[in-house]
Image 1 (cartoon, one colour):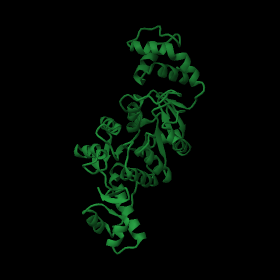
Image 2 (tube, one colour; image 1 turned 90 degrees about the horizontal axis):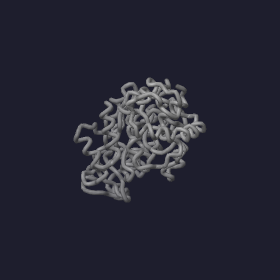
Image 3 (cartoon, one colour; image 1 turned 45 degrees about the horizontal axis):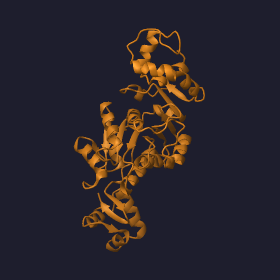
Image 4 (cartoon, helix red, strand yellow; image 1 turned 45 degrees about the vertical axis):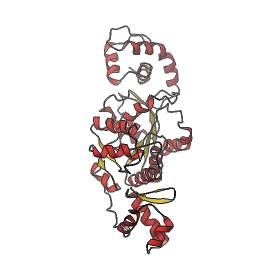
Length: 339
């Protein structure tokens, strides 16, 4: 079976790789109708017969796709539960077979603490050669991609729409940047709108490509927990950032840590999953104990911290940044808080 025909049949009926194998083994005498008996889902067969001509026409305009049978198909994804039969891409598809892929996911309604952690960790890990994969949503996803692009590494975005649909519109520029400097992929036919049911489905690709999933912020009903569950089902490690027990955005991550996820408080904590990459040991922070002690009594502004320490503005900025990257503190509404 030719690649284009394979892709058109798979997409027309939403057939999995195992179903496509059964189709090929059963024999097809006509591309529009199955004339051999199969045990395939009859609803899928009817959908295939109805949709095939239109799907084939769309595929004639989009040549950038990889089928499950191609040698370029990501090996990490090939060995997961229910891998997609077809992957559309824009950018560098070679990134999909990188051995050093980390998924960073989290809440769409991230606060300043979560956004800064996602961005700065992604940048630092990207600098070390780790490819960051996420879902190109607003919030944690977007910050992870932005951080990765600022580093020397690369990033992969997984869409819940067609490869030609920029969603959300506010991320249009970011999606374009990821396509230019990394790779954007989708299992959905070009032109597919942002259907609600497609976003949880794409999460299995995010977790499947990665060697580990890093959840920065999440509520208990977050799609990020779906990604974490899928990661565990496919034998991946799950990492999480601890947060304030009184904040909804921390409920999911704290729950993951309570149930066995690895607690992440600095980039070096991720080294165990990527042993071939050398991380530099962080320098001891001069103000760590003093600043944390001060913030232990309640939130303080930068000016208040400056008055209560004997460091210059520049030194305090550096210290606050280091503590923030370490996950010890976060800034909200102009005041610094302990996590």
